Image 1 (cartoon, helix red, strand yellow):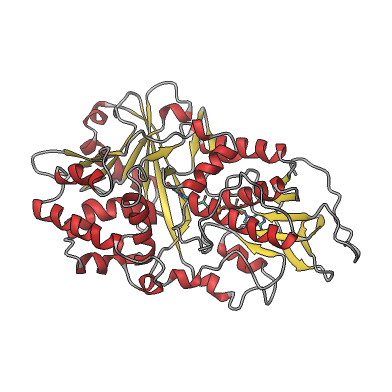
Image 2 (cartoon, helix red, strand yellow):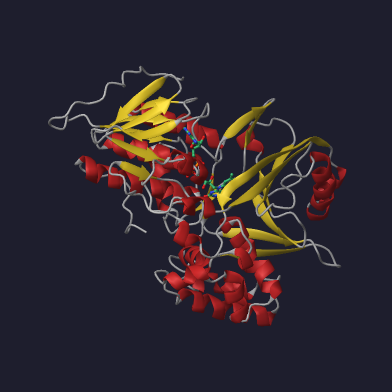
Length: 476
Ligand SMILES: Cc1cc2nc3c(=O)[nH]c(=O)nc-3n(C[C@H](O)[C@H](O)[C@H](O)COP(=O)(O)OP(=O)(O)OC[C@H]3O[C@@H](n4cnc5c(N)ncnc54)[C@H](O)[C@@H]3O)c2cc1C
């Protein structure tokens, strides 16, 4: 265990509610960390239990020799207001800044006359004009496709996100019905959608896809400006988060895998970890859906089996260290190649010589279990096509990180399966990017879910909501 004294165990006797209510948060990913901070800020005594040796869940870093490596490149958008609140709350906003203005270089490798660069960027104009000039000049689409994209975007803007029927349809069929060619899907809709939803349009719920595109591209002009950590993710989600939790008085235990969550018989709960049983007035289960299913007591959900119906999707990251600089931009997206998004991780990783690129490969079902040698043989030549300077460069290191259950699969119908923060068991709450936040599996969804669970728990514990806590527009 990391630190903290263990003084729980004795069941509370009946009587007046003691002022120091105790909440246990299970899971130290972004959802659980958020819930713990929110509850502690409201004056609740909080214990955060994380099974692994570190906080951060699916967004973490590890050491590889002299390098600090992220398990996967993470980005967020300006419209990710809850994650931005979280960054502020832990004092990390300056370490993960946003672009001043959306600007995504898009390189098409698959052209007989050589690579071609296009850009998706915005102008300082109101929506939807902010993207008009960029789209009109986007070289990866025909003129006719560009016009049809504009029409589909307006149709998308008109969709009512509260209409449950949207979740039953797939985005690919909707795009086809709105005149989008396979090329437009590949070069625009999937370019954005695959990275944000972790599914191609044909496998995505229209509700989630519409949510992403409406919020990111059709709400506020700056909504899709991209932000990413200039430091290892662990600096934010582990070190700074831990400091914030400590300062808020949260008892944080890592290497503390919860094995049971049971009603205590007195209206409270007992939470079991090896060697200790903790007593709690409220429990927030902020673990992935399968773990939540395994820990939920009988009767907590009408149909807990639904949790197992929520599928998962993999993300692969391919890490290449070259002996010299081969890329002069911070990142780019690629077309006409298996390579999807490429980020320069040199400074963040602490590399002193050469350049370190991370390839973020979503929807990686075909590659996720491929041997490293096969991935090397497949991806290095692709990088040579995309980045001519790699042809003369020496590869100093090549390795991969595989996240087989990186996100929940945003398949049509998934909205029905995602539970809200409240369970039927008083005092027991759910959080996690996979719960019903209305967002796809993102850091934003995780933080929102943590806020939602804390809100619900605070209401039941009779504690005021901290004034600085992120305000959800409305419970999704
Ligand atoms: C490679 C990759 C790339 C991604 N890219 C992006 C991106 O660019 N932008 C973006 O917004 N999102 C991205 N995501 C998604 C994002 O990381 C997740 O949605 C988010 O981190 C999920 O947070 P969470 O707290 O809901 O769940 P998790 O991070 O899964 O946290 C759950 C925690 O619970 C712990 N736990 C499980 N069981 C127990 C137990 N019994 N007892 C105690 N602890 C337990 C786990 O160890 C884990 O730490 C990416 C994910 C991956 C893997």
